[in-house]
Amino acid sequence: VVWMTQSPSLLSASTGDRVTITCRMSQGISNYLAWYQQKPGKAPELLIYGVSTLQSGVPSRFSGSGSGTDFTLTISCLQPEDFATYYCQQYSSFPWTFGRGTKVEIK
Amino acid sequence: EVQLVESGGGLVQPGGSLRLSCSAFGFTFSDYAIHWVRQAPGKGLQIVSAISSDGGTTFYADSVKGRFTISRDNSKNTLYLQMSNLRTEDTAIYYCVKDPRRSGWSNYFEYWGQGTLVTVSS
Image (cartoon, rainbow over all chains, first blue to last red):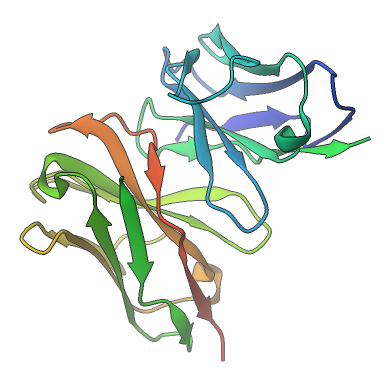
């Protein structure tokens, strides 16, 4: 099983801020890394796959980077609709696993 | 428009059984692998099971192996999850999720249903 450490668990920020969320894997996963956004009472939505490929329709202020075991999600200029919980997911080997989530809240 | 609609959730006692269904619309169901992902109340996400487009290959998380069975009926565009010997720790929202790769596996999750809540409690 690939274990994931996602940090921070809570991030307080203001509209316009640049924020970064990290995920560290217990072993290398090549580029099999995705990011999701989830708002309260809703299903998660795919933001990024393959470490850095934006899903269709996702704003360009979202970006992903990293390799091997360390990966990041960056939101370059936080918008009001971006306050949500974010999850990373590895799909290198079954069971596909998720990070514990990062809640981005309004400071 | 791709739509996945889950049903069959509810309240069940520990040791009981439940069958979830997921009806698919807006794409050629028989071309895509489908996954079940669950989320306990206020908690994170966990893969439960997955099935290939033709139903010939299945995967199960260790926590449900031997208790849950995934299946599909491509003639009805419907996915199933038969859950037996349910435990309190199975309480969660269960999401049906479409794999993005046609006739294969990508294993990240492109389209999600709205979820169905399963509560295991006496």
